[in-house]
Image (cartoon, rainbow, N blue to C red; front, side, top):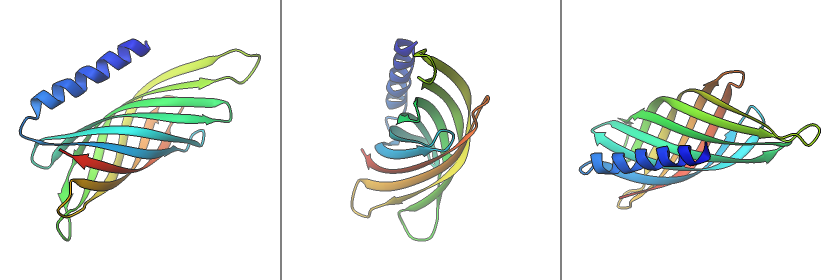
Length: 161
Protein backbone atom coordinates (compact mmCIF):
# COMPACT_ATOMS: atom_id res chain seq x y z
CA UNK A 1 0.00 0.00 0.00
CA UNK A 2 2.82 2.41 0.87
CA UNK A 3 4.54 1.71 -2.45
CA UNK A 4 1.30 2.38 -4.34
CA UNK A 5 0.79 5.70 -2.55
CA UNK A 6 4.40 6.74 -3.24
CA UNK A 7 4.09 5.85 -6.94
CA UNK A 8 0.78 7.74 -7.23
CA UNK A 9 2.24 10.84 -5.52
CA UNK A 10 5.33 10.74 -7.75
CA UNK A 11 3.15 10.39 -10.88
CA UNK A 12 0.95 13.36 -9.89
CA UNK A 13 3.97 15.61 -9.26
CA UNK A 14 5.64 14.53 -12.51
CA UNK A 15 2.50 15.08 -14.58
CA UNK A 16 1.86 18.47 -13.04
CA UNK A 17 5.40 19.68 -13.66
CA UNK A 18 5.11 18.68 -17.33
CA UNK A 19 1.62 20.22 -17.60
CA UNK A 20 2.64 23.53 -16.05
CA UNK A 21 5.61 24.43 -18.23
CA UNK A 22 4.41 28.05 -18.39
CA UNK A 23 2.76 28.28 -14.98
CA UNK A 24 4.28 29.31 -11.67
CA UNK A 25 5.55 26.47 -9.50
CA UNK A 26 6.73 26.34 -5.92
CA UNK A 27 7.82 23.97 -3.21
CA UNK A 28 6.91 24.62 0.40
CA UNK A 29 7.83 23.17 3.76
CA UNK A 30 5.33 23.54 6.56
CA UNK A 31 4.49 22.90 10.18
CA UNK A 32 1.04 21.34 10.66
CA UNK A 33 -1.19 20.68 13.64
CA UNK A 34 -4.18 18.31 13.50
CA UNK A 35 -6.76 18.56 16.27
CA UNK A 36 -8.29 15.05 16.36
CA UNK A 37 -5.38 13.46 18.22
CA UNK A 38 -3.41 16.68 18.92
CA UNK A 39 -0.78 15.70 16.36
CA UNK A 40 2.01 18.11 15.34
CA UNK A 41 3.56 17.39 11.96
CA UNK A 42 5.82 18.46 9.13
CA UNK A 43 4.69 18.71 5.55
CA UNK A 44 5.87 19.22 2.02
CA UNK A 45 3.62 20.99 -0.49
CA UNK A 46 4.18 21.30 -4.23
CA UNK A 47 2.24 24.10 -5.93
CA UNK A 48 1.58 24.67 -9.60
CA UNK A 49 -0.51 27.41 -11.20
CA UNK A 50 -1.51 26.07 -14.65
CA UNK A 51 -4.00 28.92 -15.25
CA UNK A 52 -4.08 32.41 -13.81
CA UNK A 53 -5.54 32.50 -10.26
CA UNK A 54 -5.96 28.70 -9.99
CA UNK A 55 -3.36 26.61 -8.19
CA UNK A 56 -3.12 22.85 -7.66
CA UNK A 57 -1.34 21.87 -4.45
CA UNK A 58 -0.56 18.23 -3.64
CA UNK A 59 1.01 17.74 -0.23
CA UNK A 60 2.35 15.11 2.12
CA UNK A 61 2.18 15.59 5.91
CA UNK A 62 3.90 13.35 8.45
CA UNK A 63 2.47 13.67 11.97
CA UNK A 64 4.64 12.89 14.97
CA UNK A 65 3.49 10.32 17.48
CA UNK A 66 1.34 11.61 20.33
CA UNK A 67 -0.65 9.51 22.85
CA UNK A 68 0.34 6.33 20.96
CA UNK A 69 -1.11 7.62 17.66
CA UNK A 70 0.90 8.53 14.57
CA UNK A 71 -0.35 9.45 11.12
CA UNK A 72 0.36 10.78 7.67
CA UNK A 73 -1.83 12.54 5.11
CA UNK A 74 -1.77 12.86 1.35
CA UNK A 75 -3.83 15.80 0.09
CA UNK A 76 -4.65 17.21 -3.32
CA UNK A 77 -6.11 20.72 -2.99
CA UNK A 78 -7.23 23.42 -5.40
CA UNK A 79 -6.63 27.08 -4.48
CA UNK A 80 -8.29 30.12 -6.05
CA UNK A 81 -5.89 33.06 -5.54
CA UNK A 82 -7.35 36.50 -4.77
CA UNK A 83 -4.90 39.41 -4.58
CA UNK A 84 -5.76 41.81 -1.79
CA UNK A 85 -4.32 45.12 -0.71
CA UNK A 86 -0.73 45.60 -1.77
CA UNK A 87 1.23 43.50 -4.18
CA UNK A 88 2.33 40.16 -2.84
CA UNK A 89 -0.54 39.42 -0.42
CA UNK A 90 -3.09 36.78 -1.47
CA UNK A 91 -5.97 34.98 0.19
CA UNK A 92 -7.55 31.83 -1.19
CA UNK A 93 -10.34 29.39 -0.54
CA UNK A 94 -9.27 25.77 -0.85
CA UNK A 95 -11.03 22.50 -1.54
CA UNK A 96 -9.66 19.07 -2.24
CA UNK A 97 -9.28 15.40 -1.49
CA UNK A 98 -7.49 13.70 1.38
CA UNK A 99 -6.10 10.29 2.26
CA UNK A 100 -5.27 9.78 5.94
CA UNK A 101 -3.40 6.86 7.50
CA UNK A 102 -3.46 6.43 11.29
CA UNK A 103 -1.55 3.97 13.48
CA UNK A 104 -2.23 3.34 17.15
CA UNK A 105 -0.21 1.03 19.38
CA UNK A 106 -2.63 1.13 22.31
CA UNK A 107 -3.65 -2.19 23.77
CA UNK A 108 -2.01 -5.59 23.99
CA UNK A 109 0.91 -4.79 21.68
CA UNK A 110 -1.48 -5.05 18.75
CA UNK A 111 -0.82 -2.59 15.98
CA UNK A 112 -4.09 -0.93 14.94
CA UNK A 113 -4.07 0.94 11.64
CA UNK A 114 -6.88 2.57 9.72
CA UNK A 115 -7.11 4.46 6.46
CA UNK A 116 -9.63 7.11 5.48
CA UNK A 117 -10.44 8.94 2.26
CA UNK A 118 -12.11 12.29 2.61
CA UNK A 119 -12.33 15.93 1.62
CA UNK A 120 -10.68 19.21 2.61
CA UNK A 121 -12.42 22.58 2.85
CA UNK A 122 -10.74 25.74 4.10
CA UNK A 123 -8.86 28.93 3.33
CA UNK A 124 -5.35 30.27 3.25
CA UNK A 125 -3.23 33.39 2.98
CA UNK A 126 0.13 33.95 1.33
CA UNK A 127 2.62 36.78 1.47
CA UNK A 128 5.20 36.93 -1.32
CA UNK A 129 8.34 38.81 -0.29
CA UNK A 130 9.06 41.50 -2.90
CA UNK A 131 12.09 40.93 -5.15
CA UNK A 132 12.39 37.41 -3.81
CA UNK A 133 11.19 33.94 -4.68
CA UNK A 134 10.22 33.29 -1.06
CA UNK A 135 6.68 33.33 0.32
CA UNK A 136 5.15 32.66 3.70
CA UNK A 137 1.74 31.01 3.88
CA UNK A 138 -0.82 29.80 6.36
CA UNK A 139 -3.83 27.55 5.85
CA UNK A 140 -6.76 26.49 7.97
CA UNK A 141 -8.82 23.57 6.73
CA UNK A 142 -11.42 21.16 7.92
CA UNK A 143 -10.75 17.56 6.98
CA UNK A 144 -13.90 15.53 6.52
CA UNK A 145 -13.05 11.87 7.16
CA UNK A 146 -15.26 8.97 8.23
CA UNK A 147 -15.25 8.80 12.05
CA UNK A 148 -12.34 11.24 12.18
CA UNK A 149 -13.21 14.82 11.19
CA UNK A 150 -10.53 17.26 12.23
CA UNK A 151 -9.22 20.77 11.84
CA UNK A 152 -5.69 21.21 10.43
CA UNK A 153 -3.63 24.39 10.83
CA UNK A 154 -0.58 24.95 8.65
CA UNK A 155 2.27 27.50 8.67
CA UNK A 156 4.80 27.30 5.87
CA UNK A 157 7.47 28.85 3.69
CA UNK A 158 7.59 28.38 -0.10
CA UNK A 159 10.28 28.82 -2.74
CA UNK A 160 8.97 29.61 -6.24
CA UNK A 161 10.75 28.55 -9.39
